[in-house]
Length: 190
Ligand code: SF4
Image (cartoon, rainbow, N blue to C red):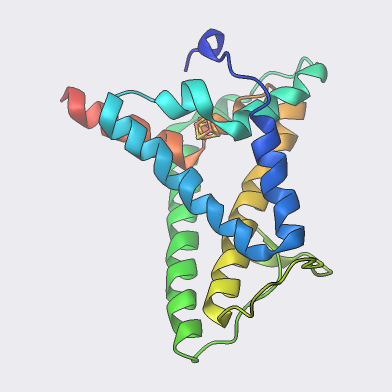
């Protein structure tokens, strides 16, 4: 990924807004679906990683941590294909769990999980205030919103730590969107 091509500014406000809007209403977390879909729409259209090189708000947010110059080098094991696969598989399991649990909640077979979790398992204490609730929403929507927020929260926390320790784009090495995009582009070349 060519860092010099990354010219956009203030996209990090989108990332910050995403996390803040959930304090108004957790259903804003559904916007994560847009963040997941648009990179692939652009990829299929342009046959290149347009999103990653130009528009990703998250990487713009990680760039804020350029000020931390620890001088640490990214460990070799972090760029190993096995770690990328592991993170990708973990992401797929997470998505599978989200889909299945949302279906079960909508059928009344499963109580909605209305809290934020880090790495699926670790519950963050406390609740989001929900300052704006114009209508009562179905339990499945609330469940799905919290689960998507948890994915975004987890990857942002990990990405922030990596940005501080190493470089702003360190998370991109294992980002599932990057792994999938690279796989797609490789298959096109073949
Ligand atoms: S690899 Fe992931 S975090 Fe990095 S620019 Fe692409 S979508 Fe954003």
